[in-house]
Structure formats: C-alpha cells, structure tokens
Image (tube, rainbow, N blue to C red; front, side, top):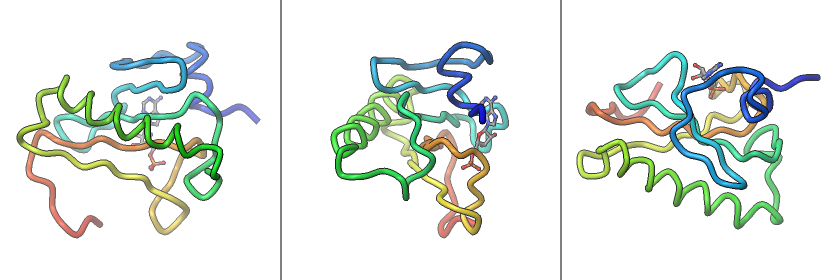
Length: 113
Ligand code: AMP
C-alpha cells in the first residue's frame, strides 16, 4: 500500500519543504491550523509513535532537535511553539506515517481538543 508521506519523501507528491537531511523531512501542512504548521517526519517508514522502537531512539532525538531548529528558522522560538504527535484514532491520527506537528505563531490553547 502506498503511503502519502513516503510519496512526498520520494518527490512523487509536491510539498513545501522547509528542512531536509539524510533521515528527516519537514514540510508545511497543507491545511494549517496555525500561522506556522509544519510536519516533521522520519524518512524511514514508521506507521506511528507506537511502532517506534529502541532502535529509533537517536532518530526520535534528531527529530526533536530539528523541530527546535525549524522553530528558529520560522521565527517562533521566542514566542513559543508546540510539538504534537497524534497517535491512534482518539488522537485523530489520519496519516499512518509517524509525523510531528510543529505549531506556532499564535497563542495555543491548553488542553488541546
Ligand atoms: P494527523 O491528523 O496527525 O494524522 O495529521 C495529518 C496531517 O497531514 C494533517 O494536518 C493534514 O492536513 C496533513 N496533510 C495531509 N496531506 C498532506 C499533504 N499532501 N501535504 C501536507 N500535509 C498534508
């Protein structure tokens, strides 16, 4: 089965890419919920956070560091931002490729949902 985000990684589907390295891709969400809404994904296909395992530890850390770097690039590191993973149906996970939402550029309500 084809994966939407794997297709973006392979450049078969266009995306507004803001960051890339050998293991990570970040692109703007097509339906932004905040002035800055970026999805940060591992290039390795992992279906969701529950499918990440011990061997992904370094990759998970690199994604968090990339998020902080992208927040700086986007100018929201001082105003603040949120990094969110939706996992499973109750959280509304719609795409089965692990992705971190980086949201900012406005005050974000708490608790979410
Ligand atoms: P989630 O609900 O956590 O699975 O988030 C999936 C996100 O992917 C949603 O915020 C969608 O707007 C976003 N999305 C879906 N298709 C695309 C696409 N082709 N390019 C960018 N973002 C997308």
